[in-house]
Image (cartoon, rainbow, N blue to C red):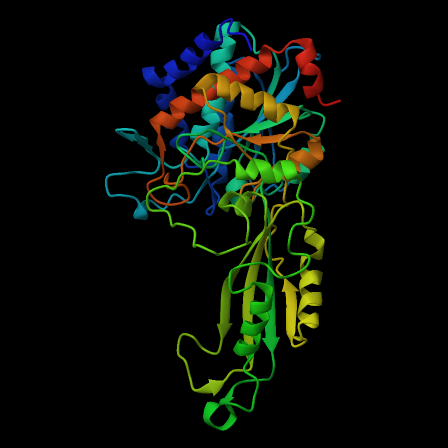
Length: 473
């Protein structure tokens, strides 16, 4: 990758931050009270697209379209396109302009979630990292390349969603309806925290999430413990023993069908190589908990996890001396693409039958849609190209993370558009996203602008031979 203006484009991107232009723009984005989780402020979601981000991208030479959500009660989608040459690769750059509930009553007394405030290295405001600040990094990095080169050197489509914090309602249908409009060769998004302040990340997917309820309903009502204790089955005890066959005393998943099968060695290797640095205030992993003979990073990036979300029997708020007749527990499974989601509930039913718990009923929780799992091959040419670019910019290679522990809409894009997925987060674990006092770090904004300007410059500098394996035929 030759320089030919690369360093100047990076300096230009960082200059937006140094001059105050980046933070001035971010202040305008944060001021839009675009809550979707709840309450849903639809006029503000629309204003973000029509009055703020749409004009900003239009000034950069992008063609702007704003589409209603297929679910009309939810916020719109903004699509901004710059098409330079059909022979060039197309990057789909994603962000979301909606935010979680601001909760101003929980913020520090001198902070307002809708007003940007800078204190030292911290920039406070709702959306400063999730996700307004992060997609602004990507957009201003595009601007730096445009101003330096006079063109991107590739085609770019920017998609801003306005409902991610509410579970992306309507997104999957929108992608299907606009498949031709959004046709691309790679998906690039900035969201989430890094695993280490010192190392950049390329995240290639997300785990899926499913929940099941275990119900042990033995009889109507409850009965005096003095007369019936020791004679009647206690549903809480039965359920506890059933759970102990699902998750071992050491936290290992014991259900055949809940454990990943045939995890590619490239995924295991990439997971082992991830550099993690604990953040102040974060808990430390418990020694000996989870799948044995695996590193900490393999357990979270290449494997599944199961936890008990809740368990109830009797009357916890006011216990009475009686044998209960009913107990219920909810277990959540976070799983990689190496687990068949459709078999999760049936596999648990088979397991409980084999373990001798016919009285425990399995109910799949369907009250809210869960994102499916997704993963891009760590050895994909796009992944390797972006990793080389990052190394050139900062002198050190990024973490390549096959699957983060959380869930998200990755698979919607990967399946519908048939493209590799990369998330390049520029935040950190202590940023306060989804809580009070959300803030970005100026140092990470600067790092992100440099990294992304380098990535976009390098995509536009590829030779025809270098582009060939990157084009989605």
